[in-house]
Length: 75
View 1 (cartoon, rainbow, N blue to C red):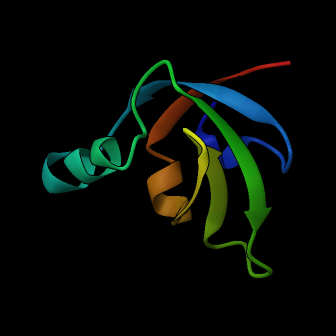
View 2 (view 1 turned 30 degrees about the vertical axis):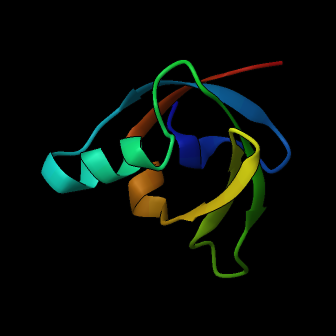
């Protein structure tokens, strides 16, 4: 499952971060690293971008970037 497939209010654990080059490094620098818990906070009215909570702060990312992040849903 990818990050964009998690419903609002639900959480997941990051398994892997895809992408290549500068984009992948930027995602990792923002704290989106494996074994980190992430919660979906909001989705924009038109569906893009989404707001997530990770490591105690809110981060807004595009759907295209969220599709590159593999997560494991938590209960």
